[in-house]
Image 1 (cartoon, rainbow, N blue to C red):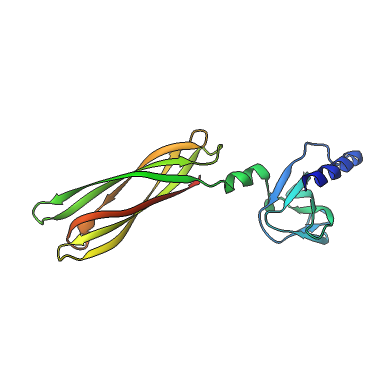
Image 2 (image 1 turned 180 degrees about the vertical axis):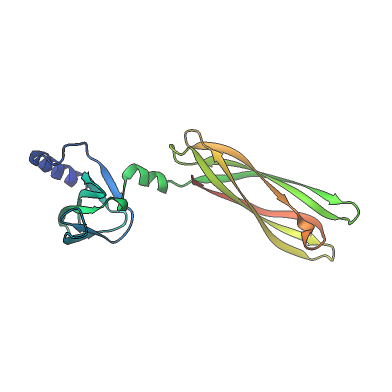
Length: 204
């Protein structure tokens, strides 16, 4: 694909059109009409689909003059609205996953001495994070599955969650999530057990 685009750009250079460095863009929506000129009044000659790669030749206002190889083999040069393409690097950045590994969890609870129930619990979750090299920060959501043991002996499954924003340096970082829990807010709870916990993240 890129070899074909380079060959086309070489021919465009001879025509005086491809006067800047190659700029590869990715289509971010579908289907997008490719037209003979910059504007919806111009005839649609093809459609480009999400994740297709195009070569940006130039921009004119809100419109981009692009070249791409259609799935049917046609070599298409035309115009599409610039809102529907993004530089390859930006798309790769957005699609790079964030790994948020919850490596350790510790919980301490305080009792209500008069009621003999758990009043509050503080759950600390240590998280190691890996993400895009250029990301300055990530948002991390952690969820914990617990059992609330009520005074009559029943164990109630409960899910608690929290969200934090934390900075990254060279795509890596670490954070501690603190969840404050009030187990006996609705019914008396005698103890709390952490069953499982996990975290997910995304660039912000």
